[in-house]
Amino acid sequence: MGFLARTAINAFALWVATEIVPGIRVSGLSTLLLAALVFGLVNAVVRPVAVVLSLPLTLLTFGLFLLVVNAAMLGLTALLLPGMRIEGFGAALLGAIVVSIASWLASRAAGGEQERPRHG
Image (tube, rainbow, N blue to C red; front, side, top):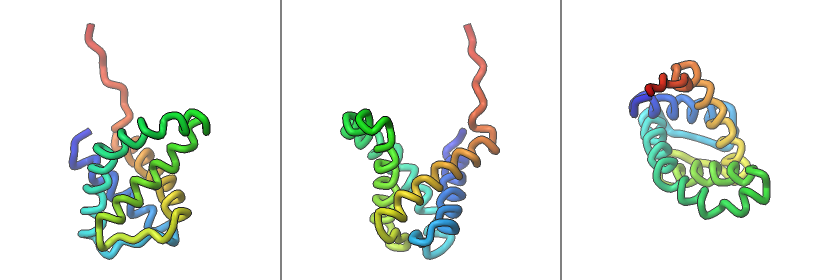
């Protein structure tokens, strides 16, 4: 799946989160698109480091700590954008869950979860 498709899916997922979660606000469409771009970059650069550093805690909580890592990535995105606001950890946690589910569903609908043919 291409870069623009992933950014569009992130924008859709963030929009769903702003509609469902009361503590998440985005000032407009341009901020939403920029948030999708920044969120994708944060997930590509910062999230792997955070996952590795929190691996012992993630193992101890049977993977549930990854929800906290995802909430932190959403919070970092909001911190970097003046037009995006998240009011508290609970909103970030619920928002991360909503964004994960919405992006997974949108990715499935766009055909991003299909297995690629193997050669050899």
